[in-house]
Image (tube, rainbow, N blue to C red; front, side, top):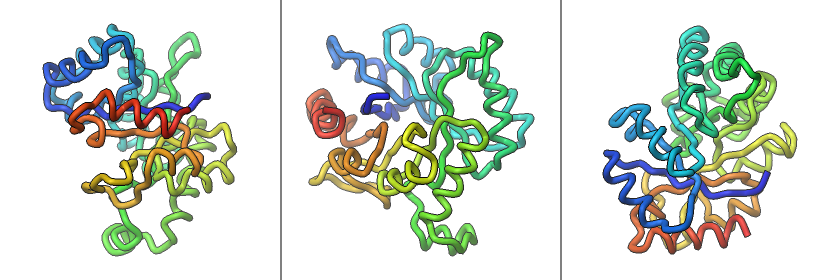
Amino acid sequence: MGKDVIIACDFPSKEATLAFLDRFTGKKPYVKIGMELFYSEGPEIVREIKKRGHKIFLDLKLHDIPNTVEKAMAALSRLDVDMCNVHAAGTKEMMEAAVRGLTREDGSRPLLIAVTQLTSTSQERMQEELLIDEDLDKVVVKYAQNAREAGLDGVVCSPLEAGKIHQACGSDFLTVTPGVRFSDGSKDDQVRVTTPAGAKDLGSDYIVVGRPITKAEDPVKAYELCLSQFAK
């Protein structure tokens, strides 16, 4: 599967999102719809963007008891998205339930990936606030292995962990990596970050890029720069 850049469309409204996408004349970038936009506009925003020809990563990070996640995924499977996710911390049983719910009667389903540790989480926060005493890299790899065993297609992780996950789970196990910034940009609230070129070298399969593109003076130029550094 080829490398690609996913634009995080973290906008508060349908109008702002579609106005942003209208700037990409003749281009159909892969887009991420997260909690802010989905909770604001509901499933219709997914249908509208899909109708325009974009691939969609629906980033809702489901994390609940297995039965609830299975039923929620069955509902999401009808939206025809290309990728969606859960939290790996929900356990293998929950992830297996997510796969069941997401799989349609004909056996097809979107890609399903699991969040390992958020890229805003540091070693210190994980230990002091979550009471997880293991090394962060070890935790991320273990969560990825659990996801693989549960039948998922990959994980969300920092680019810094992509290589270790491929070593542990195989080159075909996808690594979808936020925490990507240009070398001269702000880290914002991210902790474990790298550049698009750095993510490519580290083995990321997809990078998810939000503010460095959406807040750029010329978002199309910023997107094309990401593509040139990561996917070409």
